[in-house]
Image (cartoon, rainbow, N blue to C red; front, top):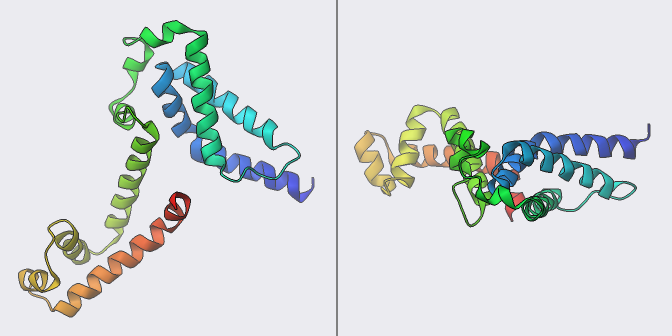
Length: 183
C-alpha cells in the first residue's frame, strides 16, 4: 500500500472517530429520529470517501461533513414528510445531555461547540493546582484586581500574577488547536 492511500485511510479514520457522534446529533436535530440520523451520517462518510478518492484531502473536512449532513437531513425530511411531525417519536428517548446539545434552535453546531468548550475548560481547570484555580476564578469570574485577590488570599501580588500566568499558559496550550480551527 502506498503512503498516499495509507494517509487517506488514516485521515478518514480520524475524522470518523472525531465527528461521528456529533454528526449524528446534528442530523437528529433535523430529522428527530436517531436511527435515521445514524443512516444519514453513514451516507455522509460514504460521500466523503467517494469525494476524496484520487484527490487531495478536502481543505476544511469538518465544514464539508456538517454541510453534507445538513443537506442529507433536509433531503430525508423532504422525502419523508412524516418526520416533521414526530415530536413524540424516537427523539423523545434522547438523554438529557443530547437534548441540551441540541438546544440551540438557530445553529445546533454552536451548542455542540459550547458543550465541547465547557468540557475542555473543566478538564484544564481540574489539572491546575487548587490555589491557581481560586486565583483564576477570582480574577476572571469575580472580576477582582490582582491586589484585591492578594489581600483576600493573604499572598503577594507577584504570586497572584504567577497563578494567573500559569492558568493562562495552560489554557493557551490546550485550546491552541481549537482556536486554529475557529480562526
